[in-house]
Amino acid sequence: QVQVVESGGGLVQAGGSLRLSCVASGSTVGMSAMGWYRQVPGKQRELVADISSGGRTNYEDKVKGRFTISRDNIKNAVYLQMDSLKREDTAVYYCYGVTLTTPPVHYWGQGTQVTVTS
Image (cartoon, rainbow, N blue to C red; front, top):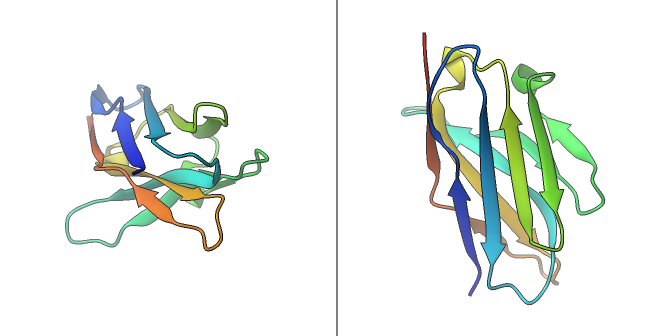
């Protein structure tokens, strides 16, 4: 059974940085896409960034130039470096991974809280 576990959330002042980490363990196959979504109460979960197994990245417009996604395919890990944080980045951040199987299976982490204060 695949488990996706995030870490690295916390409280930070506006303008500061945080680095989120996520590892998908228990998989006997690799992951194709991995990435991060975020959600605030009362709103839909939104994509923050994702990265393919080949390293192609995609960012939500609001985080471009501030967030950097990277991954380690050997570890089935994905990272999100968040710089120049803003109050509106406050949310629960969820990691996900998609297995390299047919059909592909999506796995989600439990979420990690990021709170940006002014």
